[in-house]
Length: 138
Image (cartoon, rainbow, N blue to C red; front, side, top):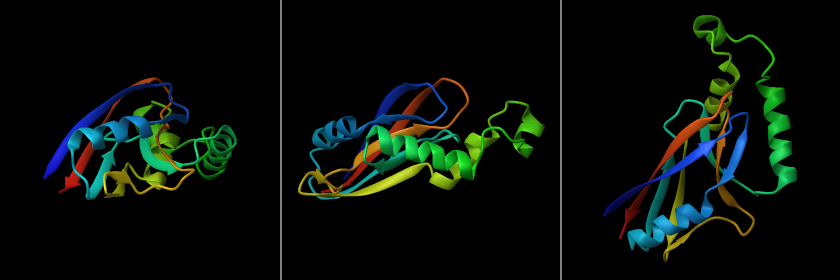
C-alpha cells in the first residue's frame, strides 16, 4: 500500500528551520500502515528535509557550518546567469539533498530519541512550501 499526503508551510528563507515531526507522525497515523518506509520530499531546489536535534544551539551550529561551506556573500555562477542572488541556497540544498527516508516499524518512525524531522529552507526570501510525504508498506 502507498499513502500520500502533503504538508504545507510558509517559510522565511535564510536557513529557516521548521520541526515537522508532529505533522509526519499524524500522516503516519492516518495511513494506518504499521511497517514500511516513510519518504519525505521538498520539491523546491532550495530546501531540504533532514533529521537533527531541534535545539537552538544545533540549529545555529548547522547554519554557521553551512555559511562556511557555501557562503551567502560570494558570487555564484547561478547568480550571474539569473540575477536572483540565491546561488548559495541551491548549493546548500544540493549538499543536504531534498529528500529523506525513514523506516516505519510497528507504526513508529525509526528516529532517535533526540531526533526531529525538519524542513530547512535555504532560499533568500519567503516561500510557500509543499512537502510530499509517502508512506509505503503494510
